Length: 295
Image (cartoon, rainbow, N blue to C red; front, side, top):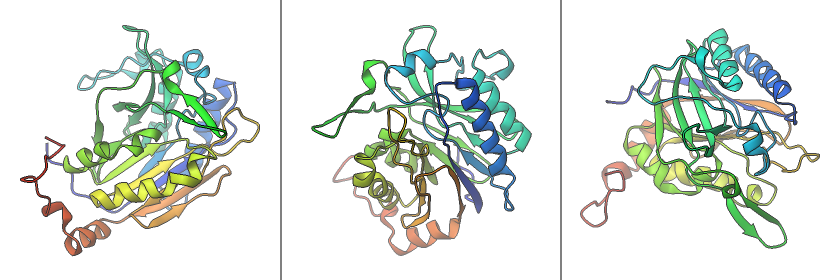
């Protein structure tokens, strides 16, 4: 299917704070912040929540907070029958605000395998769950003296690449560590994605090192927009998020600090048109010399 024509639209990134061990409170607060974003003077067309917005971030928390969703791509999904309280809240607030909503990510349990995934869900303005992405690349790092983290202790990596179409753009999906792997954005762009959006939670070590440059690299490589939506920083939590939710084109056009806030950005198709016309790398690739990874 051909992608929709990119039209000007407004994006809102909710850099959510106050995420605690109380899932019900987390869901209420996330809903309140989506409502706040939707009530802006210029109403956004698309609202994004951060990675693990309904639970603390940590390998020990993922299984305890995991929910069964039951979504199968290509099949009509009845949100009312889903056992996931997070999915029901996200669907309801998308419908209430009549906006597209990327529901950050939540820990998801597959009832068939009992595997736990870090999963992003996407909702139409009618409240329909229309796309899902399971984090493909798990955050397993060891930087001596700074941070050691292994998502693979309790999570399983996803096995598909995913995007969704709106009436204004085709949007590719990734989660946090996925941004470090250029193939995901490259293939998505060649399949017609105008933008990659990654709910993500870099930390105080990896954030200063690579948060901005990775987004700019993906945008420059593919001549697309890129955005990452982080939780707010909470120094009392076990994991300290970097914050700095941002949108790049590849120049940084909007960026938060580290506290709870909402970042708004206008996505303008003229920017991509100018970039692709002036430096036409999308038509200059030499697939006679190297392979097209999207094939």
